[in-house]
Image 1: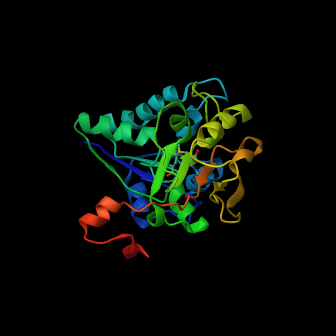
Image 2: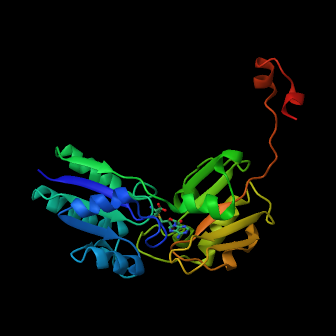
Length: 261
Ligand code: SAM
């Protein structure tokens, strides 16, 4: 009976691949991969029979990503159902802002197969290192940009805020691989409920190739609609450090605000 392992390639080509992941890839009868072209070519050098899941994406504006995700899930489950040991490897961490890995594992387990996820280095793991922002200092809020925009989600500006998929923000058709400045403006207008227009935000792109640097573009929030975005861009909003003491909680500890200084 086949087994499913879903794992991650990390962000930087070759450098984030763990021995554990390599051993899972070596043991697998079938390897499927979802990553950028450079990384895929590199991995194909080691696993020539590798199946490229990114071929299932449609052209910009043509195919609903939710349909693509179901096809990827099927591509992973089919060899498993045929009794093979399957290893699917996704860029970054397979369980972070990733639909297919969670869905495939859930389905495989429902069908009685052993299915596990191995963690890997995600984009936010690189972000904390490159930008020197420790999520433990202020707390962290992390949202998918479009979900944050179209639903009434709470935002705590005193925490570090990370908005994923800013490069496709506002695309409710789930078919596009770019955004438009009026959609970014809609996000900015919403963020102005909590921040001043001049609040500094950061456009972040971790380096994928070992020869390139990361992008750390700092700009005022109000300038965001004029910026350029890639599908890998993440929006980082540093915290407003205006924390108010919780006097009731301090009193229950038998201390006053002076204890915080
Ligand atoms: N599973 C991935 C991970 O572990 O990082 C995240 C996949 S999510 C569908 C895609 C989003 O992740 C992008 O829109 C962006 O916000 C973020 N992302 C992916 N690659 C990135 C990179 N090289 N630098 C910064 N953010 C990245």
